[in-house]
Image (tube, rainbow, N blue to C red; front, side):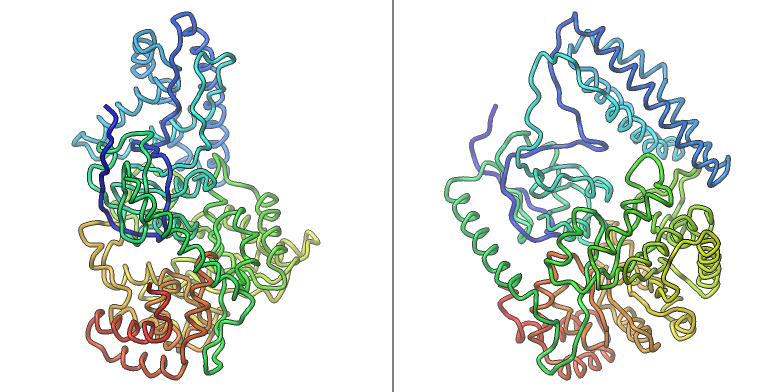
Length: 583
């Protein structure tokens, strides 16, 4: 029965904005395919399409296995044997054969339902190893669905996929968020997640309104309902009344007008009232963002997250593909600098390669620079591509998740090898390309004075530095409320890093928090880097600050005993300096 009354579901707002459209609901895992009714006579044709998809998927997995084996070794490639086994699993295929004549639906819809049911059973078993295999099964499912060619003569038309919608899901992985079609998906809401998860960070980077932590969202939602997503207050409003709809349309127009006023100031420098200049750069993940960099008034790219490009397909792009991609970004940003962060995978991000064993604590495991150094052939492909791109504009490279000097020296040695290989090939690069590291680990912050002798710049990743300093898993809903970037220990590590004497940028979420910009300016950060759509707000904030006042406040903050006091000190200046940004 269709609902006619207004309902409001409440969660945690993680990306501001208002989205209005029909509701699209997705269960756990990959997006559900469109369901069509078919006749009994069409079942045989559906099976032919399915067999063709299995063959194509089999070829893809074999190719992926061969590439990983060549670059990483037989042990790492062996995981794909399990993928091949599941692809032709007799239990799944037998279940599919039984269900097809009963359901009389297109085969991808039935296959999706059969495999999803199997995955849910696996999630509930006591055996940890079997539970860990759910991700492998989901990967195979996605590959098969992607390879399903449409039926020649569908007996029912598919619903238009490009209709503007609000997406509701149990959870979204960073890769899911990265793949969203922002022309049709106007915002999203999930049952899981936190404000500091990478999915939330990507939502803010993409400028998508987002709300997380809505209990029973998928069960309580119905596909096709009209919905309003309030990313300011953390509400999903289903079947809004006429009065509610009018209120949000007016609010949306008001917010848009205010933002356009800020965008009109993009040609002005990010300079405090007493003449202190801050470099404003963009954090970038996707090709479609390249054009927005110049329009936002960004002084280049302070962080290009290469993993979203490297891990977007079924195989890793080779050196030539990477070079072409990086060169396009460098040329689009000229004369400003582009800083490429080398592959940062692991933890809650996109998997670099699948492991035979699930890591007990992936955030303290195989991730960041550790992955790259353990896979030198892959690492050097990326370094050579970045070096070659440096011949076409100003480029910097930085290494993530550095914990000490040994990793820096090892990475620099491989970089020197790449330079020598390019010279031997006769391929151009900038011999003065800047090299930096991410400061995300307390040990690196404490060693900043030593590390500064070996690199040209630091970039503080405040999200990871916070979670590692105060031992709080930022994506664990049980403790995410304890995640406080203004913890005195974090602030002191940031000051210690900045005082090491080389240029230091802030590229984490703090850099776009208008409440904390006075604190960052006062601590002495030379650069702030954030999503392009947030740059107008940050520029406006900086232009209304007094640097001397921020410096004095930062000294007070360094003596404070708790995070609330530090945040209050910074917020007091922010509210006095640019109160209209808090309306």
